[in-house]
Length: 278
Image (tube, rainbow, N blue to C red):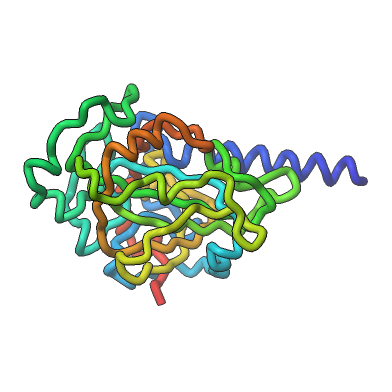
């Protein structure tokens, strides 16, 4: 009996890990889509956080506060996946992304802030980051007893295949300015707080986070190919500037083995696929 239960748990974890693995990849991995909106799925993400409307009736409980969960992964997407008043400049086609938005402030930067970097930043086959670009950073938290690591599969285990998930989110404009925020002050170096793995800090001066229920993101999913996973989102509504050189340094070495920006999922707009923001 025990062996059978263990096999079921391991199989469930493997399937969930496979589902997580492609959730924040790149556009070339996007699924083929039909003309109809997918049905039967729970609320989807990303969304316009300034609109509170949503008709999706699949409900699940909000995940606990991130301070009562384990940080399991940090990654970022080029361009904002979500949309808000502060990041509403459409950026489809840039960096091979399938949409996304830029911070409005990115159009009003100084020549010094836009100066080219000495070395390439987070360069990969998908391109590299440049001053003036927008990124959306995801701090993923899990109710499982796990350690931070590579990919979203690090957020679960064989004994915890269906965790509560919470994503703390901040959109940044990259600037070549040593006085801007140091991205590494928001990362993870093994610190524990009250028994939970936690980032060094999270942004606290970019507005009250908008909380809602949704799904995982990334270009693998569309309005015709939905994500089955349930996630509580906490998206800060204002952009902040971050020193692009510190992002580059983070890409060179971090426990998450992240070295480049991921692609985005197009904004979900169908009310049938959105939860109501209460």
